[in-house]
Length: 170
Image (cartoon, rainbow, N blue to C red; front, side, top):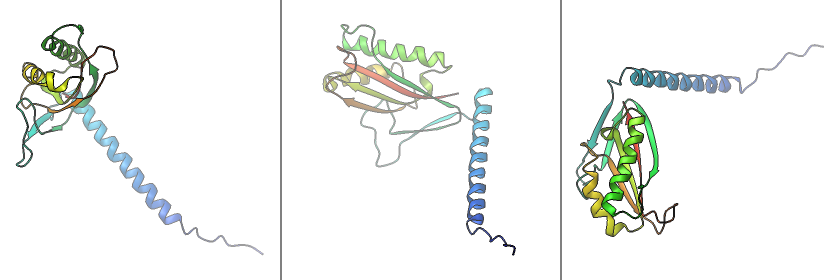
């Protein structure tokens, strides 16, 4: 007596899921190739736009409520601090931005490519006005999105500020 194999009821579902996953993978690959082409050609599609919708005002000048970017690659710069922890706060902020500038340059970018800035402060209320003044000497319009956070301490003893950025590379 021969046994006739019964159809697997999950087969159509497996084919559908497999096809869907293949489609997603193909789409992701095509996007990656397009981004690689943008990066290799100087990214003519690179775009950075500030969003200022009604109801989402900026609390201060020197940053945007939101930044929309297109094209290029992302650069994540870890929190940077000043060289001289004993310098006045304006000098410390400038030294920190100078260090960020070195990393941006190493990636082929500049402050015009920065999409978001995050700053961490041990004495935020005291030092934030200095930071707000100095950042305008480095950041350019459209200003990046920005967040400032007060914290009781940072990773390095004596460090009173740390700044990290994310930049959209050309």
